[in-house]
Amino acid sequence: MPVQLEGIIDYRIYEETITAVNALFAEVEEVCLGSMLETFVSCGTCYINRYFVPTRYEKQMVKIRQYIDDRNKSVLIRSGICITDPMERGLRVLEISLLSTGQVTAQVVTQFTKQPSTIEEV
Amino acid sequence: MLTRQSSVFFLTTFLIVLTFTLYCVFDVPYLATKVSPALPVVASILFALVISSLLKTTLTDPGIIPRPSNREAIEYDRQAQTLEPESGNRNANTPRQKVVNINGQAVKLKFCFTCRLYRPPRSSHCSICDNCVLNFDHHCPWVGNCIGLRNYRYFYFFITTVAILDIFIGVCSALHLGLLTTEKGTFIEALKHTPVSAAIFLITFFSIWSVAGLSGFHTYLIATSQTTNEDIKGTFNSKLRPHVKNPYSTGNCCKNIWRALCGPEMPSLLDRRGVIQSDIMVSVDAETFSRLSTQPKSPSPEPPEDPRMSLDREQISTDPPDEDIEVGDTECLPRNPFPAIPTPHCGTDSNGVKSHNYQENDDIEANRNTTISMQVIDPNTT
Image 1 (cartoon, each protein chain N blue to C red):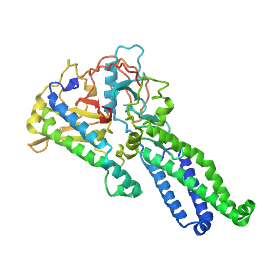
Image 2: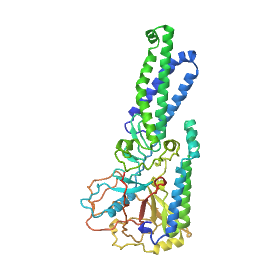
Image 3: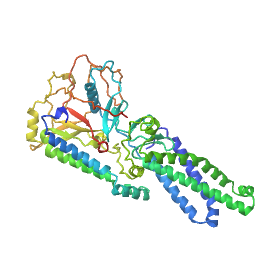
Image 4: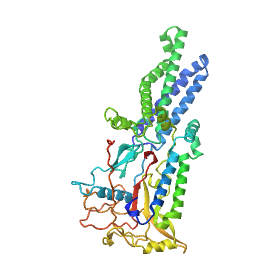
């Protein structure tokens, strides 16, 4: 958990949120019957079906956004933080904003520890 | 979407359409009557598949990673500085890296200075398209696009169907010439009757080797779960690097093929039709608002504020039950002065923001809302 969040939010809530978001992504990235069916149907109709039916991933992105919105409203904003949907940031980062009304500024130093790698790095 | 130098794509389309048209005009009338009417039907279906997969490959976003805003780039700068503040001769262009663990294999994530982001695993920067692309395979000039995460299966489908169509048309035109030879007696007579069939045969004969070779190569790549980029660099080559194992491969060839071709398709990360929102408004109840207003937010020693660099943030108060706090991503935030990292001074960067000269003293940056950007823990990597 990043240093800046300590004292602001409970570790369990933070962990739950991150785990849930990861689980939602993992669910849709799985290669299963649904994705195979979608691939074959799209191929068979020369991809015309994409105009009419959204893909599994797009539906899941809507779910993820909804989950994050709900989580923000119910738990996170009350504690003073707000998570931005990762799709807004191009799936690069999960942005957590500390809410404040702008009275105080501070320079925050993040601590990073490098992971020791015993295996050769790629 | 087509890339900058896309003229070769039109050449490819022209060649395929030309060959097929010549085939239809010269070979089909003879073969449909003498051999079977199913031949042109099969050829037409193959042609439709070829054209649709070609268009899908060319016009699909390969998985371009959108560039971060200034705020995010500043956060990366700050983290990089904190990570190695003591290294000598460090300037803003020293390569930055993060190391993540994917399925037990340590993978280096490099920082792309053009796009100002840490590249996800397997992605690479294409200099022709000037973008970082997810699962970058290669830039294909014939197709006029990068081949990446989102259009790899269409590309694979394209080269396999082109190979099949090539062989099919080649065999048909050879058949045509062969049957005519038996009718007319000599090969020369048959050639005089339909010279175009010979031309078709020659075109298909010379192109089949490269196309079939490419299909075979990509089949091998899919089976071993590598990209062309990784294969060329020898990243997972067991002879060059015996201690590295491919973390993306399941170990089973069929499973790898299954995963590559039948997996879910990610939507484009570029929001081309979206409307730009100036700031994200967060609705907060009055109690939280008052608590946040009074709460001092300084987890570390509080340096003096710099009024020059303060940010204008409007407080919009709405109805009593809900107060709105702006959680913004303001694009006009100037770059932080990091005295430890001198930067070559350039007038304006690509975002049109003037980069400032760095200051000597340790002044504060003006983040009203301190943003923490963290890497999304991709489920594929854990």
